[in-house]
Image (cartoon, rainbow, N blue to C red; front, side, top):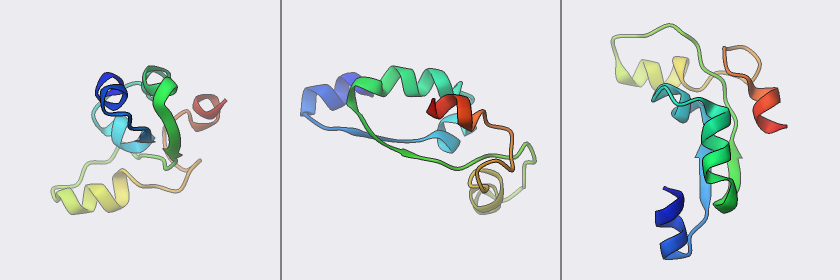
Length: 77
Protein backbone atom coordinates (compact mmCIF):
# COMPACT_ATOMS: atom_id res chain seq x y z
CA UNK A 1 0.00 0.00 0.00
CA UNK A 2 2.78 2.40 0.91
CA UNK A 3 4.63 1.67 -2.36
CA UNK A 4 1.49 2.22 -4.43
CA UNK A 5 0.72 5.46 -2.59
CA UNK A 6 4.28 6.64 -3.18
CA UNK A 7 4.16 5.73 -6.86
CA UNK A 8 0.96 7.69 -7.38
CA UNK A 9 1.92 10.58 -5.06
CA UNK A 10 -0.93 9.75 -2.70
CA UNK A 11 -1.23 9.75 1.08
CA UNK A 12 -2.80 7.16 3.35
CA UNK A 13 -5.71 7.28 5.78
CA UNK A 14 -5.45 4.18 7.94
CA UNK A 15 -8.47 2.72 9.71
CA UNK A 16 -6.93 0.78 12.59
CA UNK A 17 -10.12 -1.19 13.25
CA UNK A 18 -10.17 -2.41 9.64
CA UNK A 19 -6.49 -3.34 9.88
CA UNK A 20 -7.29 -5.35 13.01
CA UNK A 21 -10.26 -7.04 11.32
CA UNK A 22 -7.78 -8.44 8.77
CA UNK A 23 -5.67 -9.68 11.70
CA UNK A 24 -2.84 -7.17 11.20
CA UNK A 25 -1.08 -5.92 14.30
CA UNK A 26 -2.25 -2.29 14.31
CA UNK A 27 1.08 -0.95 15.57
CA UNK A 28 2.86 -2.73 12.71
CA UNK A 29 0.28 -1.41 10.23
CA UNK A 30 0.86 2.19 11.36
CA UNK A 31 4.63 1.70 11.21
CA UNK A 32 4.40 0.23 7.70
CA UNK A 33 2.52 3.18 6.21
CA UNK A 34 4.01 5.92 8.39
CA UNK A 35 5.96 7.66 5.61
CA UNK A 36 2.71 8.31 3.68
CA UNK A 37 0.30 8.45 6.65
CA UNK A 38 -1.80 11.63 6.97
CA UNK A 39 -4.82 10.45 8.96
CA UNK A 40 -5.74 7.66 11.38
CA UNK A 41 -9.37 6.60 11.74
CA UNK A 42 -9.53 5.63 15.40
CA UNK A 43 -12.10 3.12 16.52
CA UNK A 44 -11.91 0.00 18.61
CA UNK A 45 -12.97 -3.60 17.94
CA UNK A 46 -14.71 -6.32 19.90
CA UNK A 47 -14.03 -10.04 19.69
CA UNK A 48 -17.66 -11.00 19.03
CA UNK A 49 -18.53 -12.07 15.49
CA UNK A 50 -22.02 -11.64 14.10
CA UNK A 51 -23.49 -13.64 11.21
CA UNK A 52 -24.16 -10.46 9.27
CA UNK A 53 -21.31 -8.49 7.71
CA UNK A 54 -23.23 -5.28 8.35
CA UNK A 55 -23.60 -6.13 12.03
CA UNK A 56 -19.85 -6.81 12.23
CA UNK A 57 -19.15 -3.51 10.53
CA UNK A 58 -21.42 -1.54 12.84
CA UNK A 59 -20.90 -3.27 16.19
CA UNK A 60 -17.67 -5.25 16.07
CA UNK A 61 -15.32 -3.16 13.93
CA UNK A 62 -16.31 0.38 14.91
CA UNK A 63 -16.54 0.48 18.68
CA UNK A 64 -15.93 3.56 20.76
CA UNK A 65 -12.18 3.90 21.43
CA UNK A 66 -11.25 2.34 24.75
CA UNK A 67 -14.20 -0.07 24.89
CA UNK A 68 -12.67 -2.90 22.85
CA UNK A 69 -9.45 -4.85 22.54
CA UNK A 70 -7.10 -2.68 20.44
CA UNK A 71 -3.97 -1.12 21.95
CA UNK A 72 -5.09 2.35 20.84
CA UNK A 73 -2.98 4.43 23.25
CA UNK A 74 0.29 2.68 22.44
CA UNK A 75 -0.53 2.68 18.72
CA UNK A 76 -1.04 6.42 18.66
CA UNK A 77 2.07 7.07 20.75
